[in-house]
Amino acid sequence: MIWVIASALLICSCASSSRSDNLIEIAVIDSHLPDGTAYECFNIEHQSISNEPVVNSGTAVHHAEVTLSHLLELTAETCPDWSSRVRIRHVQLSGEVSASSRELTEAITSLSDSSVDLTVIALTSGTSSRSLEDAIQELVDTGAPILAASGNRPGMSPGFPARFDGVLSIGALDNSQKPASFSAQKNVDVFLSGENIPYVTSSGDIDSSSGTSVATAIAANQILKGILAGKTPSEGIAELIQQNRRIE
Image 1: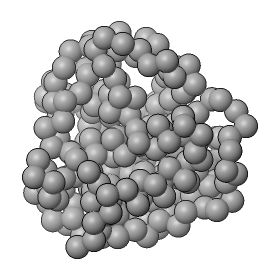
Image 2: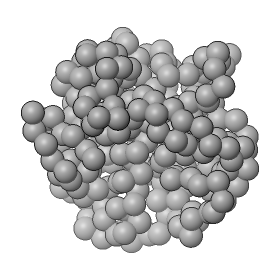
Image 3: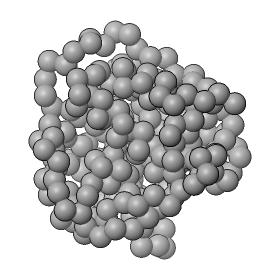
Image 4: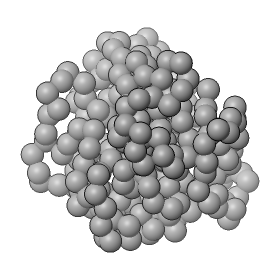
C-alpha cells in the first residue's frame, strides 16, 4: 500500500513513451556492500567516491544489502529472468544510514554525466549546502527521476537531498499502514511500508529491517518493474504516486 500525502515532484514529459534499448541502468547511492552470492547473477558496478574509512553502524545490518535486496526483489533461491536487463551503478559512501553533505555531493556529481534511468539515494544528510543543491539540480536536469529516503527523523521534515525540489521523498509506513514513528513525516511526498520488512542478506540469509531507506528501495522496485514492462521511468513515477492514493 502506498500513502501519498503530497507531491512536489515535476514529472518530465520529455521522455519517450517506449524504450529503444533493453538495458536498464539504476544508480544507487548507499553504504559499502559486502561481497556475497546473492548478487552473482546481477551486473553491479561498485564505485567509491571517498577515501574516508568505512564507518560501521555497530550492527550486523549492512545498509546497502537491505536496499539492493528490496530494489532487486531478491529471493534466497532463484535468480530473476530479467537480471541481464538491469545494471546497478552502486556509488559507495563511508557511512551507514546517514552521510555527510560533502560525500553526497561528490556521489551525485559523479552521476550528472551518466545515462542512468533512475537514481536511488538511500542515505540522508541532516545538513545541506549550495554545492549539494547544485549537484541535485544538475542531476534533475538530466530528466531521470530521483528517489531519496526522507530519513529516520521522527515527525520532522525530510533530510537532504530528499527535501529538494525535483526529488521524490519517501517516508515509511508502520505495520498498521500509518506513518512510522521513526520516519520523517512533514512534507514527505510518498509513504510506503518500511517496518520490519524481510530482506535477503549478501550471503543469502533472511533478516528484517526498518527505515525510510527500506521504503525507498521498495518504491524503486515498483518503478523498475514498470520499466521492465515497457514504461518509461517518468511513467513509473506517476504510477507510483497514483496507485492506492490516499490523501490526508
